[in-house]
Amino acid sequence: MSINNPPTRPDELPSVLPVFPLASALLLPRGELPLNVFEPRYVALIDDAMRADRIIGMIQPRSDSGMSDKPMLHAVGCAGKITQIAETGDGRYVLNLTGIARFRVTSELAVLTPYRQCIVTYDDFVHDLDSSGGEADVDRAGVLRALRDFAEANRLKIDWKGIEQTPNEALVNALAMMSPFGPEEKQALLEASSLRARAEVLVAITEIELARGQGSVSSLQ
Image 1 (cartoon, rainbow, N blue to C red):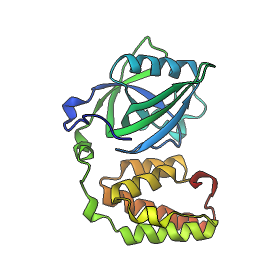
Image 2 (image 1 turned 60 degrees about the vertical axis):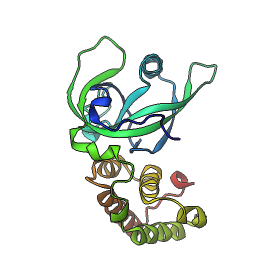
Image 3 (image 1 turned 30 degrees about the vertical axis):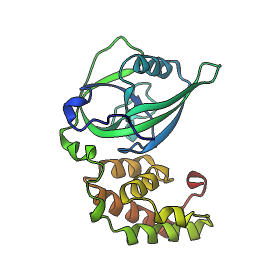
Image 4 (image 1 turned 90 degrees about the horizontal axis):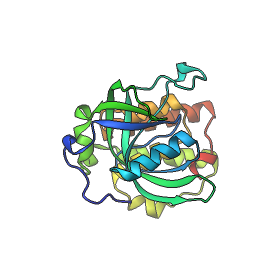
């Protein structure tokens, strides 16, 4: 789903973001992330976001945080806009988040809200706001080869005709977001410096997982 009047400059994005820490959840620019929100603090986050600009920050907790109720956060996340939302009648929201641009956390605010808020900067990721940036640099053949190997190893049916019509950014980002990889691998995909680099990381991780025989079907169906 596209965003109406997408921002083209970092100063068009909020410098303070309510953040939703969620392990293994990867949001990338112009990617689509479905969310089922049920925890009261994050229901409150969504309520407040809907009253404001509908933009929230998805970020992963660090794996060395243990089971803390307030885990340490990775430094890089991705801002997204709520582009679809439905109430379930039992206190939950089912929504769709569309990625805008990655951010780097500079500090966390002391707040009274039940959810966390961070001061962020987009300066390292200005190119995220250019939807055509890096399209020509992707080794599309390498990405498709890795996808084909993964599909064959896991007996997946792939809509190859649809894949052929998908632009490089949409292809790479969708595969990265749907991939069954762990939090650290997802963070590496998020922090890749360019679309080309993300494609290379995606291929490398896929090849490693195939070599280990740990490909997972469920996350790609």
